[in-house]
Amino acid sequence: MKRYHIFISHAWRYSSHYYKVVDWLNEAQEDGLLTWSNYSVPVHDPLVDPNSAVGKKKLQGEIDNQIAPASIVLVLSGMYAAHSDWIEYEILKSVDYGKYIVGVKPWGQERTPKIVSDYADIMIGWNKNSIINAVLNS
Image 1 (cartoon, rainbow, N blue to C red):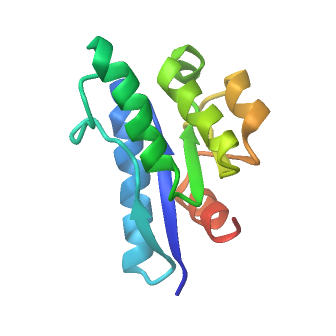
Image 2: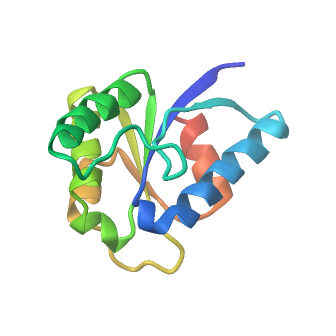
């Protein structure tokens, strides 16, 4: 079975969205639908302190190292993504690396940040089947 290497771009303030997607991917793995590796940077496992001067450059390098081996980048595209320098950085770095980008619109979201819709290879709705199918069809 193919292993999918996934980076999930998300805002730490809305980590519940990240954890829900991780749960869905883990459930799909337990059900034998896919095997995956998580290359994300969740709030519970930060790479460096992003608030220090040295930390910002170091964090960019560490994010680059996380995205580089990923085959798929899921971008959780709540409107907060339009105001996040880090999500923008992750999207643009993913484009530089030629990664397959999946924009995921959170439940009930009517608008999508332009940065996400401009660079996503596909935009999908907020549900388990859409995310699993987007990964399997990447």
